[in-house]
Amino acid sequence: MKKTLGFFLLIIIMLTGCSSSQSIQYRTQLSPDNKLDIVRKPPAADYSFIHPEKMTELPIYNPNSDQMWQVDLRSSDLTGLDLNNRLNDLLYADFDSKTKWPEKLPKGFNPHLIMELGKNPGLGLRELHKNGITGKGVGIAIIDQGLLVGHVEYKDRLKMYEEIHCGDESAAMHGPAVASIAVGKTVGVAPEADLYYIAETHGVINEQGNFEWDLSWLAKSIDRIVEINKTLPKENKMRVISISLGIGGKMDGYEKVFESIEKAKKEGIYTVYVGSDPFMGLGRDPLKIAEDITSFGKGEFWKNRNYRNDYLLVPMDSRCTASPTGEDDYVFYRKGGMSWAVPYVAALYALACQVNPDITPDIFWKEALNTSETVKVDNNSNRKLGKIVNPLKLINNIQELK
Image (cartoon, rainbow, N blue to C red; front, top):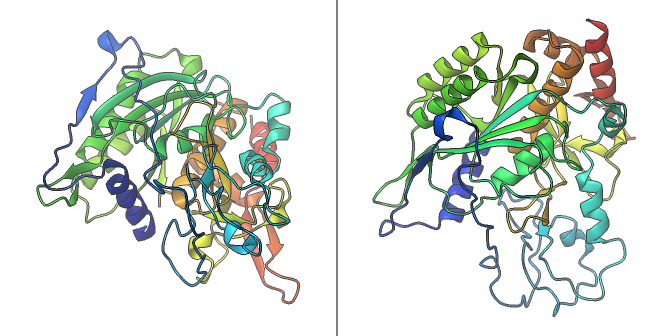
């Protein structure tokens, strides 16, 4: 969980760029008279600050470092670089639609191909989509950072965008990513589910420029989702909330969050967050196909840790998602973090709700673990990696329980 909390805090600081001399305006805007609305359209983000000038050298990837964004090429100009013999570094790069590449690239590195491979949610989900299992009629709620509401991946699925104590002036990187992983038309697990989105900041920046956690706003956001759900027709209820955050005892207001999660549960809404259930995220070589289970391995952030094989493993790394930099832009994240695993699980639950409206989280997890698969870690040992989610078997089993 510490990894996820640190990741989220880094994103807040990086995207607000605030100091003790700056003040952030936290806004709360709800749909008037409970008539669901897009209350604001945050402008696109500008990531040219990452490398403001034309790059003069490519960063070197250090596999022994836990440092994030080691080879961050988002919205950067590499046209003056000689990238010959830099394939390994490039295979650990983060980049987006606004990255400018030199004419000659190393053999084996094709950024367009890597992006297209990364858009695939993988492991048979697109076959389910072809068979009409898309989350249609099921509502997914996401509580996260500011959203680029008009992005082509999810704009047709977005039924509501509200803000509760939100400090984001423009779209943040987190929001478009989790929204597209959940309901994106090409990236998403449940591409026809309805999306209800609340942008919220989990605390405040104090006068010293440090972030102070206050999860009472998160609790209020969950309560708001429950309130909205009561107004929706029975056939279009929200069934799951996705919160890409670890909720811990050192965070002010965490008790209120668990109280709100319990209220949501009583209304038939399941809440997925980092640590809510036994799941972890998978890694994938960016050049390997996401449909093939053997393409996956340990997630980058935990690849050097021992693993007990009792957690459900879902795709996480090497994902291409909606980018906050433009409504048609995409971004490739080499390392995902648990933030990307949470909306995957939540959207998978939405698919289960479509085929069996009586499904419960307990039954979902029992079937998810029972239908999971294992793969060999390498060809030189008998070590196996599992339990890797099998969406086809899972949804088929849940459908047969009706």
